[in-house]
Image (cartoon, rainbow, N blue to C red; front, side, top):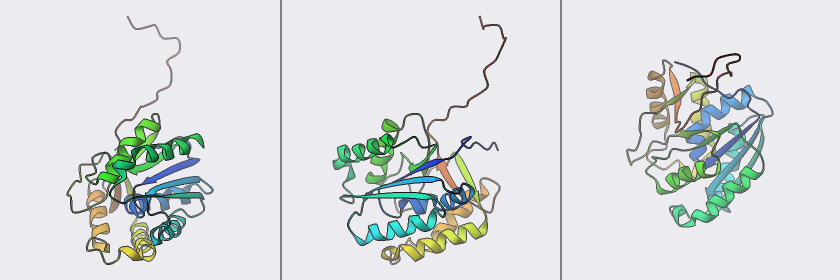
Length: 223
């Protein structure tokens, strides 16, 4: 399989509808990328949970998942489950992020995610970030909306274990949920690992990818 990553990685953008979405979907990738690029600028925007315990959990969790990064976190107070009715405010928040700089890599929900909040955010991303590499992360849930991913990031077992441990350490409000357990996170990571010849992996969806090639010099024009 071919490996494609940005030539440079100075800034990442993390987008989530709810506190814990980003860490569940891309926590392993964040650990790997932040350690590989010390001092990277990371901006995170979460649409719901502002002013609550969930915001406190999210800020502590993202700090742990982005070691060594220059991290900025914004958590809005849109109503959980009602993000589609707050479309304008969500888009404005994305546009404000765009005005602060150009990220080389974006992590966001997948556009086919069955949760209305996730899906709305995913649909907004390409309307604001039209020429950026955006990876749609996946979240296993009751809806059964998982599809075959198009991009994989292999995770060494210690990284996967660290991701699971940090999820349970920082998101105490979610520990009583039936799906929030090590078997869920490790099970999906093991399946994605099999699909990319690794032990574990996180997987992502890419809706559009442009391959750059060096310009041909001295070549005759094509008829």
